[in-house]
Length: 168
Image 1 (spheres, one colour):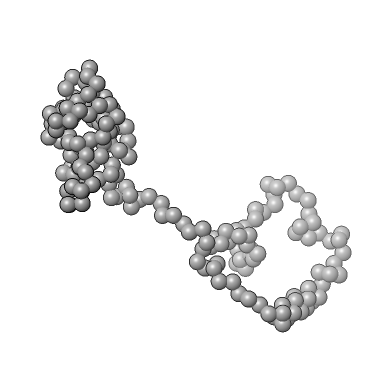
Image 2 (tube, one colour):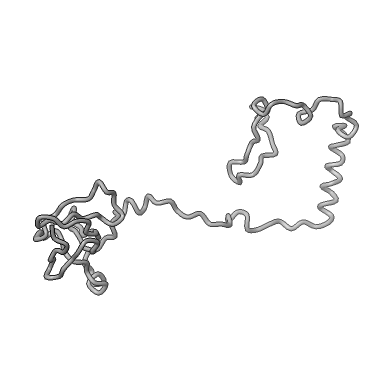
């Protein structure tokens, strides 16, 4: 069992970087073991089940190309296929675009809104209702019986409405 292998006239040891040709393309790989004229390689970013033994003298193994050679158009991959890279989740911006612009209200609009709200409360008689009358929030019940709080699908905030058809 040797500790180094000679590839393209250079010594590559355990943990060294190489490129391996697979499926017509060159992939970055790392040397895991060297044994009996073969090297066991692990594809960078790949699974351990994809590791394989390759003869040292094989034309499938070469030293990594320099950045200048890569710029000249020689194929070079980074251990993942383009399908795997496109399947990665897209980062979500911290600020949501539909929440950037807030509406500015004037004092007159606030007064109109509060007057309308007062009229609704007076017409429904909530202010005159005694505390002994059972309401949705005054009934004591175990949490398993109480309906769960509903959340808006778009914003994730608590929903302040009920669906007229389903009453949810």
